[in-house]
Amino acid sequence: MPKITKAVIAVAGYGTRFLPATKNQPKEMLPIVDKPIIQYLVEEAVASGIKDIIFVTRFGESALEDHFDTNFELEAMLLRTGKKELLSHVQKTYRMANFIFTRQGRHLPYGNGTPLLCVKNLILPGESFVYMFGDDMVKSDMPCVKQLVDKWQKKNHSPIIAVQEVPKKEVNRYGIINLKPKSSDQMRSAIEKPDPKDIKPPYLAQFGRFILNDKIINIVDEFYKKEKLGKGNELWLIDAIIQYAKTNPVYIKKIQGKWLTTGDPLRFMQTAVEFALDRDDIGKDFRQYLKGLKL
Image (cartoon, rainbow, N blue to C red; front, side, top):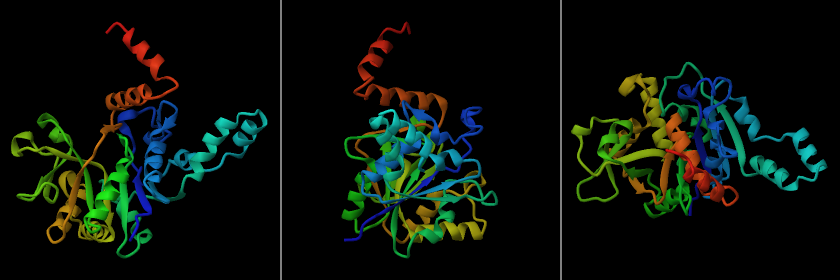
């Protein structure tokens, strides 16, 4: 049986909603308790069987690259002072997987499909891979990526889109998937950030987890070469998926778990609280602290 071994993680944004904190560091390096956002994503992918992690970065993101590399002086100090548990945490970051970094050139258009142009030569013909947005996190018993991979195996290795239902008032924040008539999981089309009055339930919002293939990359590349950009003059991944779905099956997977985004300060703080409360070491004390606040 074919296996998915590669995950592409898009981390080429500027994180402008978090300025000045992101002036000299990637937004994905902001910590959720004591781990950066990006490490949670990598751990999710690795726990799902991924061996190769491909980061699509931009200029100025050396902190992210350094995080997944060795730090000889730090490790030597931890070993010398007997802090073996901390040493294991540090070494885990670069031993989890094989890490590959590729830069997204400034000449390329803005959009969440653009990182795929940068990995075109890293994906083999006929190969499927995981695609992740760097600011979406999922709390679940089974890793979100593993849920997608399992569905991919059952659906003859067709592309899979992670979705969760959202309230009608929030549909203008996401890409909303429309299903084929009489189907509970096959995509017909999608609308990027629609007006709530223009769509009908169920409100299935796609978020930053996909299983794609090289054919979808080729469609994105064709759109780019023909300057066929989408809404807001951006290169949207969903436009390529819609094009692919006209002649090939694309399926959704309703994720079992809680989708949490870190795309803006409010939701970042909400996500941090959720993960802190789940911690065995600090969760109980933190919960007591929250209960004592005069809100």
